[in-house]
Picture 1: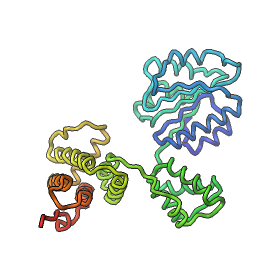
Picture 2 (picture 1 turned 90 degrees about the vertical axis):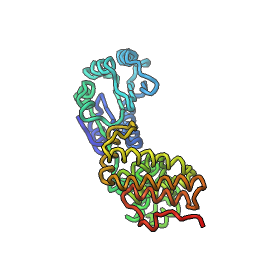
Picture 3 (picture 1 turned 90 degrees about the horizontal axis):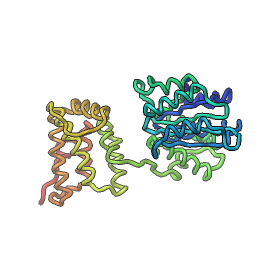
Picture 4 (picture 1 turned 135 degrees about the vertical axis):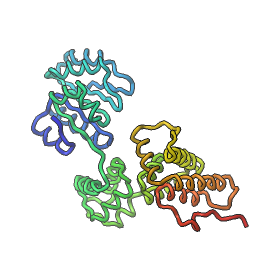
Length: 339
């Protein structure tokens, strides 16, 4: 059985199945889905819990042994397996298939893992066995258009409400970080219990919860998101990231795109999806624009070293805009000369 995350609660009210797989890359939603299964299991007498974690290595024979043993105190137990990004090897897959063929009455199997690959994971024997024995819940990342609604629902759970503008501002400040959103909602519930929140309440109470890395900056550029890229650059500046670090990241990907645009090997290794996105963006920008970006990056290096009177952050911003496909007019992009 395959369920959406929003269907999980209703299914648990109807029937607690013997096996559950909670998959996804959004940690807050995945964690809350697992918590919901555990709460319903405890309510039905599954008071013990045995956990196996792929981060420290899973002994699949120990999993098999634990599943075959009766509960230490004669009660019911949750057998929890946290796979994360990893997947069962041949031995592990076989043991899971054997266990899922007939889950003991005193055991509930709860498996969590990263997002399932449609071709590789969904066709694996252990996933098919779990689908037949229990339920699979895939937690999908939340899009920007969905976040304000999620925030409104979260506020309601805490006895709050908010205007559309207030919810939109909270969504913008959190930059898609659901954990940050949830924490801010809890804080707002303490500051404004039972109230209807307006825009000013969010502005006064909620800081910018975004936490970025140079990778976030380069990813925004390959999507052509100029405004978001500038916001990330500004946040990194405020957090004390040094200009040479950002210049290195920008120059590295610019050189790779310039090579792609010229039909050469980019000379860097990265996930296929990321490489494909970079190649598409290189085609959109074209060789001439990429060469101009590399030339502008050289002036940034001069500004960082004090060999130019230009402010390094202003210079970085002009490179960011060019790589996002929205370059400044030539007169504004041109660095000033020494007097």
